[in-house]
Image (tube, rainbow, N blue to C red; front, side, top):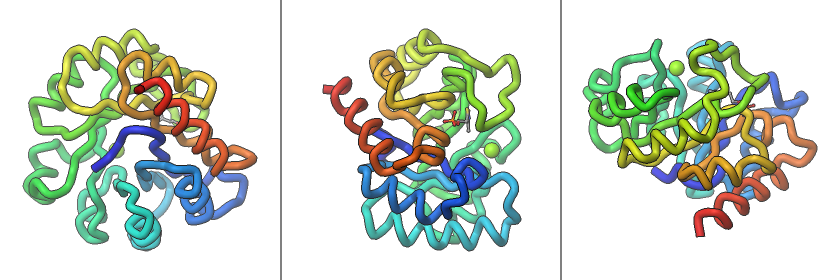
Length: 211
Ligand code: TZP
Ligand code: MG
């Protein structure tokens, strides 16, 4: 698992009619380190079929591939891991299914939730929403937590942290300066005029700040 750098989360309805495979190919060209399949409106069968395609693309490129929500699909397509939230299987139950070979990511927005996820065995955390986002309906309590909360969570846990929510090539620097290892984005890549160039900008920014 590598979740440092630029991490793409897919969402077909932000892609301006380009296919998810096309966006992922462009992101790979731009140096993405991880891709998460997150298609909330697709059926399990559709997600499985897309996951099979994206697994192929990411494997060839040596990019980490993670499936949102569905532990079964992650195992079925030999993904590198799964990304879970409050409504999904608890981490220990997912671990029963996936074993220690695959990674488990967990969405959190508070220090307490981050500590609990680490204790439960999460391998990395998605922390957000840092800024306002138009890609997801985020509950008020989880919205716009800011880079201060990112820094608090970085100080509280030892596992890698990926910042998410309204992250752009312009503000990614602040997210990494707060201690995040990577930045996860939907629209900054998926809705960009040039998704490969946007990915490259994000990846370069993270690399510059980390050094
Ligand atoms: N989780 C917290 S915010 C968010 C998710 C999936 C949406 C991120 O989308 P964008 O377009 O990068 O703000
Ligand atoms: Mg979920």
